[in-house]
Amino acid sequence: MNAIARLAAAAALALPGVAQAAEWDALIVEHVIEAPYEDVLEDLRLTIEGRGFVIDAVSHVGAMLNRTAGDVGAQRQVYDHAEVTQFCSATLSRKVMEADARNLAFCPYGIFTYQLHGEAGRVHVGYRRMPDGPMQEIEALLDSIVRETVGLD
Image (cartoon, rainbow, N blue to C red):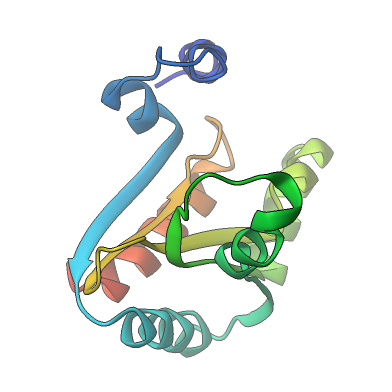
């Protein structure tokens, strides 16, 4: 999908009730696996580190939302668990940033994992799609890590 179609999909997502599955598919890749959440998170960590990458950070988005729910007047719990695992590749990052310095905007690379509230044993794993051009090599890397994590490779 080209950059214009991705921008149109992103604009549609900004309007409540407009987002459709095809629009989400233009923006993210997501797989669902039946497994304990902590096992999937550990498999993701092992897959990333097994390829020689260092995890820069794990953003505990679900815990933050739960912790701040009362402060923002939340009406419901969204996730039982939700993290974004971030890492970088010195080799690939240099390659894509030499091609276009603005590719810095996509680094570090993130893979999300979440379990919706009340859906024990069902884990979503995915990543944001990258723009056309040199960043497709990064998208291929993210795809292979996610596929290995969920047992598709």
